[in-house]
Image (cartoon, rainbow, N blue to C red; front, side):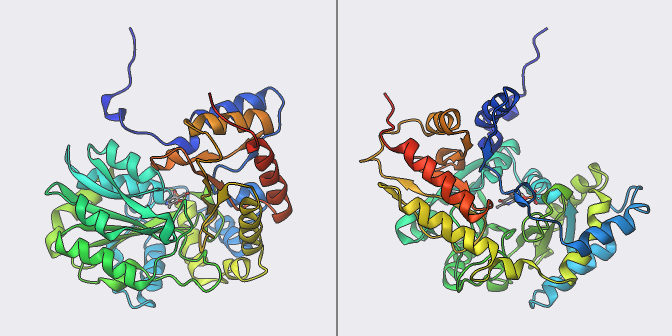
Length: 403
Ligand code: PLP
């Protein structure tokens, strides 16, 4: 009997760990060393777990072997609640759901919201888990354009044009993966005005809110529009460099009176997965309440800031490559001038690079960017390693063309 995957997966794709990674693993098995610049996993580049988080995890581990509350450990949810309250965002502990990373909560939020054919406005380029989660839930991701000429800011007119009577939600990723754009309050006002006018749920993915460079500041979307139902996503993977602990949260912000049934749906889904990883939940209060070591990494001269600078300098030194300098997050999303580089299939380009230079990056179309003229690179390796690797990418691109 042939076992065939469900048609539910027909439009679900997550290229960051797709066929290119499979080829990298094959090359590794054959004895090659691959430089993986494809995932935002700080631990892979020598970033250590903050010691107080590790100590607390170890201390609480012996008591964390039982199932816990489906929505999450009360003390951790209280810490998340207080974290937002100090920013002037009113929340109750019951508004907070803890999950195995933000990834699980993104999927829950879409499963509970969408019927077949419902539409969600998702940025292009996007962090592709959003598009995949909308599709898996039976919905259609309608991509709105972020404008590279305007430092990758969302194009409000394009969003407005794409709203239909099936549109249920809008996704905002700020700071943005893959572009590194950080949105100012005026732009957030523009985005939330559209949501208000069309009665959309706002999904605000703020997992990089503490990874900001230069003079960038971050405003939670719900602070701009407290009258809108906003799901705010965040977690420990990036700012606290513990992606493997799988610890994230979703805060249901704004008025809940009209959303009782949706919230019930979220709670059913939380109950169905019993609870999130308990040991990692013990790390949340420690992380939010402790020393914010991320700050020194992103300040001028800090390791992450220096790596962002090195990435930008090396990329823009390649002829025909331009890049909007990232203001936040852990990535750059450079453009390959189509006049210079004849690329029809950017996944093939990335595969060719992998085979030639043993460097793995992700093609731009993997982020639901239409044209095959971008790629994403993580800014996590040491500055000198990034400079060397990007130099090799430049040499590979020199003369590269596809038939
Ligand atoms: N949202 C964005 C924008 C991300 O970039 C990532 C991971 O790269 C996630 C969510 C998922 O994070 P988590 O490790 O909490 O599942």
